[in-house]
Every structure is written in C-alpha cells, then in structure tokens.
Image (cartoon, rainbow, N blue to C red):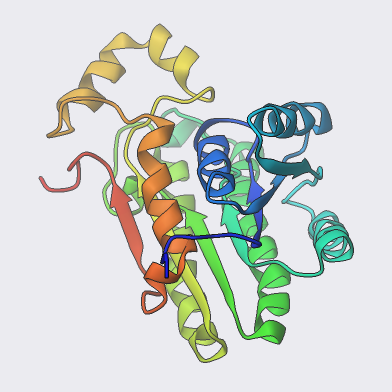
Length: 253
C-alpha cells in the first residue's frame, strides 16, 4: 500500500490561487486527489485551476470569502453537492501587514485577525462537522514560524499565527475521537507573491531574514509541499495537534 496515495480524495485549499497554497494544491493534485481552489477573486481561482488542469490534474475553483461564515457555508455545500465528501482541508488563505505595533489601526488589526484566524476557524468548524460525520478527515492549517518566535514589524501577524497553532491543538484534542487529524505547518520566511515586492523594496529586511536562517536562504513555496502531502496522507494517521516548522532551522537559535 502506498501511504502517500491520495487517489479519489477531495481537498479544499483556501488561498490556493497563489504562493504556498497553489504549490500545495499542485502537490496534492499530483497524487491523484481532486483539489478545490478557494479564494475571494473568482478569476484568479479559475486561472489557477485551469493551470493545474492543463497539467492533467483534477482541479476546480469555487470562490469564497473565508472571513464570512455564510460564504464558507456556501462553499462547503457546493463541494458536498459536487463531490459528496471532503477528505482534506488546507487553510492557506492569509494576509500580512508589517509596521510598528504602535501605528496599527483597529481596522488593520481586524483585517489580519478576520482572515488569518477567524476565517480559518470558520473553515475548520464547518468542514470539521462534515468530517466528524464521516469519522475521517485531515485538516492542515498554515501557521508560521512566528507562532513560536517574533520578528520586528510583524507583531499582529505573529499574534494571528500563534492563534492558528493554538487553535490547531485545541481542535485536535476535541476531534481526535472522531478520527479527524488537525495539524499545522509553520513556514519560515518564504518568498511569495504577497511579499516579493516588499522584500525588493526593503533589501535590509531581506538580509536580516536570510541571516536568521541557518540554511542560508529564504524558503520557496515548493519547500512546504512535502509536509502538506505527509499531513494529508495515511502516513500521518497517528499525528495530530502538531505544528511542523518548515523554516530552514530559523527557530533553532
């Protein structure tokens, strides 16, 4: 038996239109799962799904705003109507805003927490209910290494990701008896569409991030695919409540 075979499984990937989410969607689809790419902008999701289909992979796009519980409920209903089940949920949708903590507005705080934590909770809650009914499921939350350590200018983002890792543990405990595994991946600094421009404009910050990583380089979205496949597969059936740090060793020191 191939422990990593995902044939016939249905996976929702929030934020699957770009960056780490897209890389994970491609990796999971490559193991013969069908991926449902979910993001707010329908055209971007459709473009990502078409890109995967052009490579012979099974993918569809269903738009949703994770910060809206009703929107997530509609997403879950649509996936169940189309496929009859949800085997895997990857919560990759997220935002980051950098700056001195004393300058953050209430609106900026709310935006980060609404998407990174509240929206992730809605997805876990509504998909988790369906997994509980089937007594089987894998949930993978994309946290961050700043759930464990802090970096300058990222205080609110770090708070949201610490919440993600702690929520992961709480859900894992509550749902372990239902055979629903809840784990997280904690990426270290990774170059994605969300931060590429920022690092181009702030080379001193890029240097600080690279200097903080023992392996001497920034992460790439593809670096996180193996961890996601492992946590989505039968190979991780006895693992739950963990945040797997994929950070080039940046939390060692």
